[in-house]
Amino acid sequence: MSDLHAVLAAALSRRASLFDALAAEGTDCFRLLHGATEGAPGLTVDRYGSVLLVQTGREPLQASPEQLAEVVERETGWRLTPVWNHRPAFRREGFEAHHPAAELGPRTAREGGLTVQVDPRHGGLDPLLFLDLRAGRRAVRERARGGEVLNLFSYTCGVGLAAAAGGARRVDNVDFARSALSVGATNAALNGLTGPWHRFVHEDFFPAVRQLAGLPVKGRRARTRTYLRLAPRQFDVVVLDPPRWAKTPFGAVDVVRDYPSLLKPSLLCVRPGGWILATNHVPAVTLEDFQRVLERTVEKNGRAVESLEVIVPDEDFPSPDGRPPLKMLLARLR
Image (cartoon, rainbow, N blue to C red; front, side, top):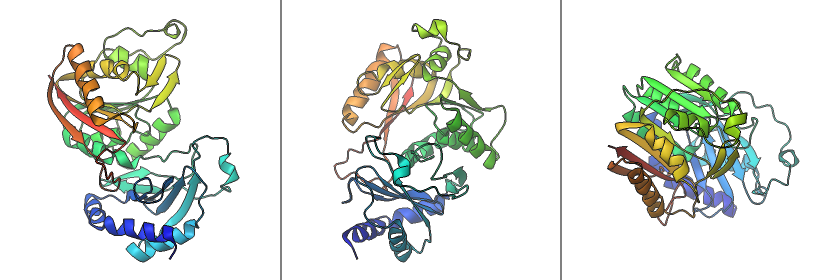
């Protein structure tokens, strides 16, 4: 057995009890090897239903994806279709240079008993469902019953789907990518969670959230670009899951230097007694610093934190130092 095969086998063994717990939840998509902390930097191996998704971010994969699938089958009994995606940090290399065209057909997986699309080859390089946010989706689902949920930077609307399954009476998913919202809408249909109460709002974060918060849409572009008109509204649960950095016609998203510009309008959309789930994916930002930013921004805007919970990613994303890159704070606001 090669070193990589042994590393994968050991990672599978460590997750045996987690696999059982997730299966009981109705989940068959999870991380099998988190290379950054399990002896294979630059490599991740995930199960998405019937697919074994192998991703590299530094050097192209040296082992055979088929051999990794054999290790998984030997250790777990799962016979999965291996797919390798190379995602170099600096996109100088074309994706096609490492990946011949493959017709895999539509693929789905299950999370919490819900069916979701997980096609490993689609228009982008990112998976259609981010597995490290599973614990956050679970937390929102547990608090959604009878409430109204605003899902910002919704991507493929996984949090919104969880909220809908949890019994939310209204879910608004907001994202600038029409293709991502389309995946979310299809997932809602796959699970019978459609209707006028489950909305997919194609709009830039800044004009959408500022209007909902009752704030003016700022910036030179606000006078020259059209945007969807939204009435001020508050929600029982607001989810703020921004990317590390992005430039939009209405402003810049920078979670390291200016998280408050995202957090202020978002928390103003939370009803008294409601919840905000805020995330930060940047490893260099500590949990303590992130918590201080949240608490200070809440206070500056005339609100108070009634309770605060740290949501930790599930055990398939091990963090030996106890500081996972993904920080999730769930705050109840007065």
